Amino acid sequence: MALVVAQEVPTSSSMAVPHGPAGVGEARHRMREQLRRGGLAESVVDDAVLVLSELLSNSCRHGRPLGHGVEVGDGDVRAAWRVDAQGALTVEVTDGGGPTRPVPSTPSVTARGGRGLNIISALAQDWGVRDGASGEVTVWVVLTGGHRRDDFATRVTGPGFDFLDAYGTYDTFEDVD
Image (tube, rainbow, N blue to C red; front, side, top):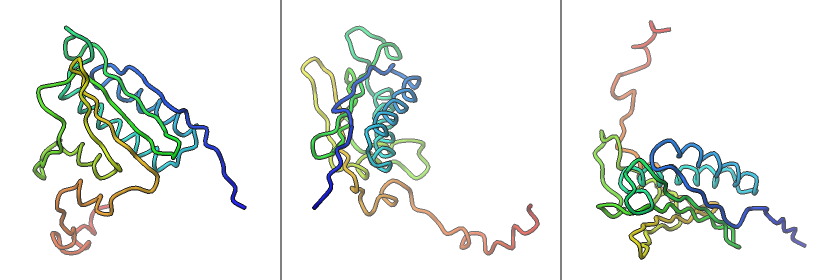
């Protein structure tokens, strides 16, 4: 006989997030709290919070706030998440659109940004972009427990080097305390 434990995950949550970096922390905190309370695996919660951060950062950098005539830096974007009956978590961020489409880039090793959608691709079961009739753009990501691509680390980091190959041995640093 199998024992089935029902999770108390809210079926959905949505919040307005100020267009800019100020609201990202609050949205992450709220999501983490709700998903933990709902009993999702900590690895899924961690991935979801990272995905939400990336989506909100991209929205602030490349998109406009929701509403007509709202200046960049004013107004809000919308963050939402929901868990379906099979336990898959969908995370969405909707903004007022921008001059470019969300697509993964290929940043140089020294670039300070440009890896967000590659990180999302590595963590997600699926993701995509949905256009609204009024110019709104929603980027959605589906996360499931246990799904993480095997090549995650190599897909989101640049080529590395072996510290000992570059510097010899640790003896070089023996005088440092």
